[in-house]
Amino acid sequence: MRRLRWLQWTVYLWPMPCTLIGLVIGVLPSKGTRKFVVRRGTLGIYGQGLEWLLLRAPIDGGALAMTFGHVILARDQHAFESTFEHEWIHVKQYVWWGPLFFPAYGASSVRQWMRGRNPYLDNSFEVHARKYEQK
Image (tube, rainbow, N blue to C red; front, side):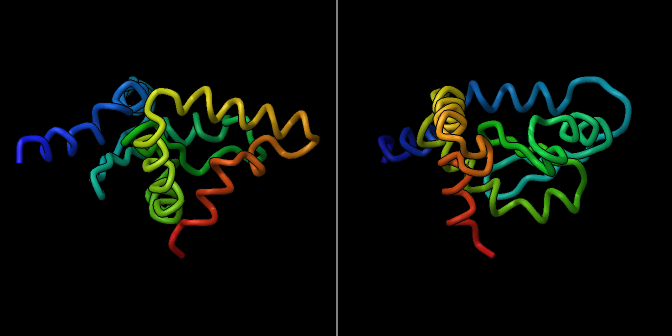
C-alpha cells in the first residue's frame, strides 16, 4: 500500500520543476486579478495579466492557454474551459516527460521547422494533444 502511495506522488514530483515555473508565472505581480480553478489534479489560473502574456506567445494570434506541469494558464474563464481537454493532454505529457518536456517540445518544433513545416501546429506534442482531446 505504501508503494502505491509513492507511485501516486511521482505523478506530481517528476513534473514539479515545470509546475513551479507555471506557478511563478501565474502569480507574478502584475495588473489585473487572477482567478484559480482546481480540476482533475491541476491548477488553472486565468486573468488580465495572463491574457496580456498569452497574447504575446510566439504563435499566430497568441495562445488561449498554456500548460506548465500541473498548472494551466489561460487568458480568461472561457479560454480555460474551451481548451481544458487539450491542455489536460499536455498535463499527461508532463507526467510522462517531467522536466525533459521543455527540451523535447523544443526539439520537436525545431525538427518541424527544419522540414519546412509549422513548428507549433506540426509539433508532435500538439498533434498528439489534438488527436486525443475529448470533444
